[in-house]
Image (cartoon, rainbow, N blue to C red):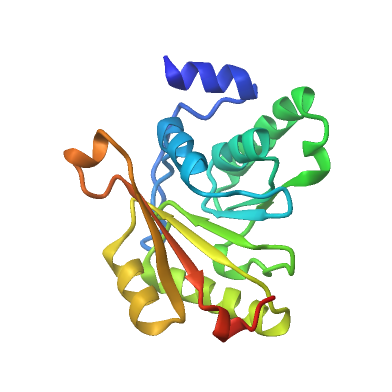
Length: 207
């Protein structure tokens, strides 16, 4: 019932999940549950000035949800052409109810590691979309961007991979600043949580 409510509210279709990735490095599409996004926005402060990058966005549920409730701009990165087309259709539907989204939300079809990090990108969202090897390349792109344009950046992991966690905590300057356990799901599955990582301020000299 909750899924149907949000789908109708946002005027999008992201519930149906079809197909598997043919790549060993890219995982199959699965949308973040609305119940999880609801708990995330209540604990994490999204600002209008933020731009969220959702890697492996699928049909782009997350950026539509955050735009509607938190007024953030966003970009969805998706390598699968069919999912990208579905996301574009969702944007066309979403824009009918939220005209500003036409210019505040973007979608692009490319490999995550090929996406050129923009200076306005500040929050990077991952629902375990690909292997740690790809993740490392993406994180390196983020760090290079921060070197060129100093700013605060956060990484949000949902259903976090142990490989992602190990890499961030042992080989980067990102540090864990919050853990959001999705109750009651977490009681049965310890992966049902968000981890929020932030680049240490002294590393990026952010103001």
